[in-house]
Image (cartoon, rainbow, N blue to C red; front, side, top):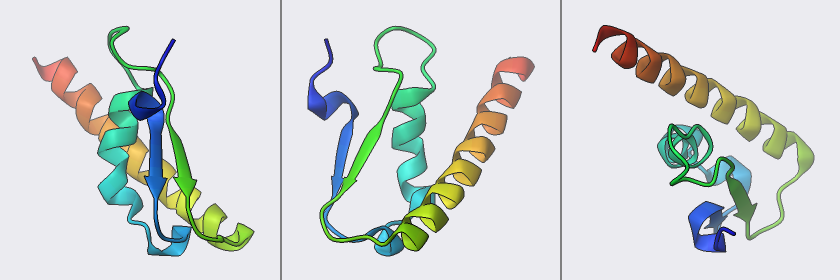
Length: 80
């Protein structure tokens, strides 16, 4: 069983103030694991009200940042 600190990130601002590119490495490490030492999932909680449009934009930007990280990591593993 995982403790919340292993997968939960609480962000004190609404989604439109969060930097998905800056948070992507943490979420990648939590969710895209190579061993069983990471949870395999990540959860972010925005502490302040976030409207659905801002949240959707943020999630799309996070997906793009995670995809870029995945390609980078896949290239490093392939070239090693």
